[in-house]
Image 1 (cartoon, rainbow, N blue to C red):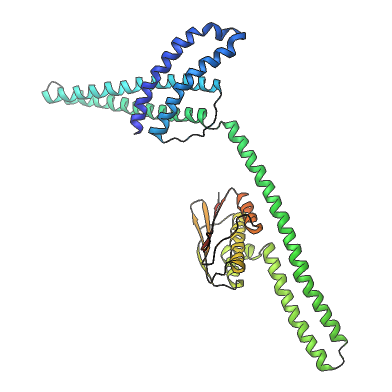
Image 2 (image 1 turned 45 degrees about the horizontal axis):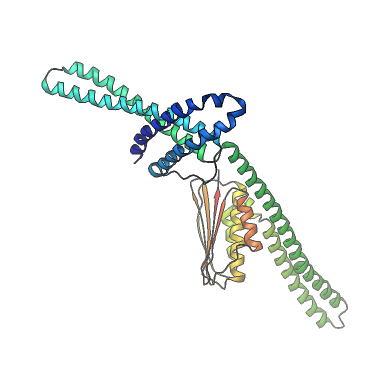
Length: 370
């Protein structure tokens, strides 16, 4: 298929050569005069676009190239067609030399069969032909790569456009990270205010009532309630601290930190971990929060009875997968999943959410490790 595309590219270079020879000559004076140059370029480019469309079709059919459907400037069209015509003609010459070498090889074998060629001469000719064949094939490969690069430069986004696209992606990712951090801060403040602070107020009230207790039995009962309330406060404060940043990541690693998520979840969680080598701390943190947030959402909203967590490394990519057998219907635009999108996107990773109505819900994060 690709060989046919290369051979066809040699033939399509001929119309380009004729076009520039005939139309370029007719418009030569207008192209040289500054006052008519712009209109002459437009006229020349209008015909060049038709020939360029054939080249684009050739790349799509024989090389499976896919280019964005967008307008291409006239000067880029002309530059591409001129360069492509030159490359196609050179490719035709190389293919012709290759065909000529095949004919010579056939003649040498025929002479050998007839006994008119000695083995020493055959060896010499074979070595020389092998070197020329190697150079010929390398030349064809280089020209094919050059042809593909030309097509990408003309029909695909330019280096400047790619750079601008990357800048826009980084700006969007930075804004998303800032929003995620702000959302996380508000959630922590809400957890402290509505949870820990209220419990501490209740603890203070119990201790105050115990001090004013009229009987030892009443004071003892209130102290027992205060002791239990203090344990609940410590548990909730520990939960808040874990949601901010788990110290187990630094001390024990990702596996132990995820084991802590499993222990704190009210639903059975099965872990499938296959971690090889050291992971960047940012990747470990993102993987932990993907699992923690997904498991928390499943425990609160999915009515699931089991959660499966898989964390595996494939080369330079860490794949985190969380699946529950709940009712599904997770909203990707929710605050929790939006924060995960921002956290994963900040590392140039991908987050996929599949949660049809009726379940199951599957959240997959692909995090680059290099």
